[in-house]
Amino acid sequence: MSEVEFEPQSPRLFIPNFLSLNECRELEFIHKSSSTVGYRPIVFSTTLSHLIATNSSHFIIPFIPIRERLKDKLEEFFKCEYELFIEFTGLISWSRGASIGWHSDDNRPYLKQRHFSYAI
Image 1 (spheres, rainbow, N blue to C red):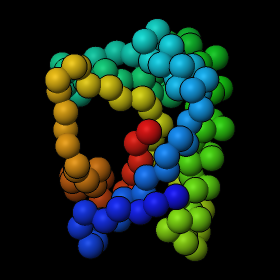
Image 2 (image 1 turned 90 degrees about the vertical axis):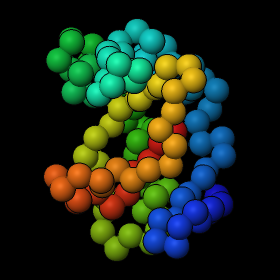
Image 3 (image 1 turned 60 degrees about the horizontal axis):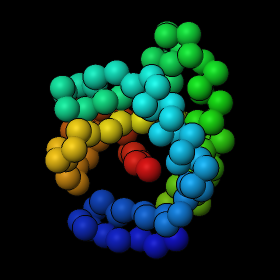
């Protein structure tokens, strides 16, 4: 594991090869099979709640061990005193050529409870 700090108050953790090639392929298949337009027309989203609502709950199974493994890594790296609560799990993709850049996921008053967020 390695940490790269862009801002002193916002450490970033990069975990190379966190997902196996098979896990990547499986998540890509799920995302291509069941994503929907996200919060912008150039964004596509697959969330656990969407999978349940669309009767695709069988697609949830691969997410669970991956998100738990990542949560464990975050708790270890940031030396969390308490277990982290997972608020949201989803796959988000952007259309070719679109990007969001580095940003904070607590940028709205109703999101201020977010202290950690991660992307794979």
